[in-house]
Length: 240
Image (tube, rainbow, N blue to C red; front, side, top):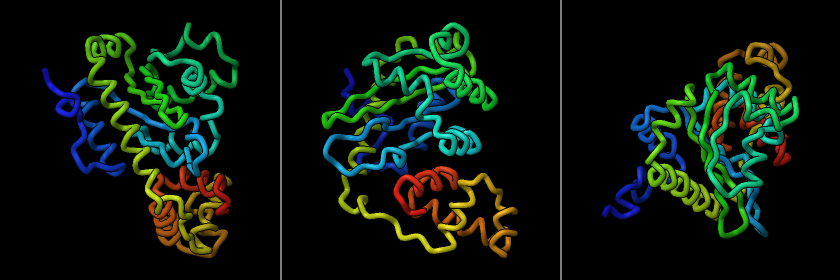
């Protein structure tokens, strides 16, 4: 019998920077489209930025829309994760009937990005945190077929990802707020207002390439997935 470590997609020394690459291996093995991980409730008695824990290979446009519209407050998957300790399948049709129209709208918009059917694993940590790990497929039958009998692989992926994220967030240096320049803050602020790079360039009297550079630098400093993610995080932490 193989040990838990032998089954893991992660390697000793891996951190958050390796999550997307390692989970890409899981998706390839199971012929799935996407994965996502996010802490929904931070640990007790600890400074923690839950939104900074989003790790996924979803299309950047959808990530930006999800974060800027704060869909994590409406997402039916997030609501079920808060109530359940068991993995659950989700999708369209019957699954959505129990939810409000605004919540169903999240799924309707996600469908445009081929995020249609998923399997989510709720995670409850030792410090009271709640997180969710999901894998996604366009076909519900395909998702059920390829995940049948793969419980060990999916659970190790979910809990190993959680351990890596929580360990990374426990680093004392991570509690320090990043230092953003005035231009970086301005670019994020206008991004939050829904302005494109071209529109921001006109407003600030800069070139588009300069605006993109500032946005990219701010995104990297804040360890976010894209400029939309960074803009929302900067707002929540009081940086803009």
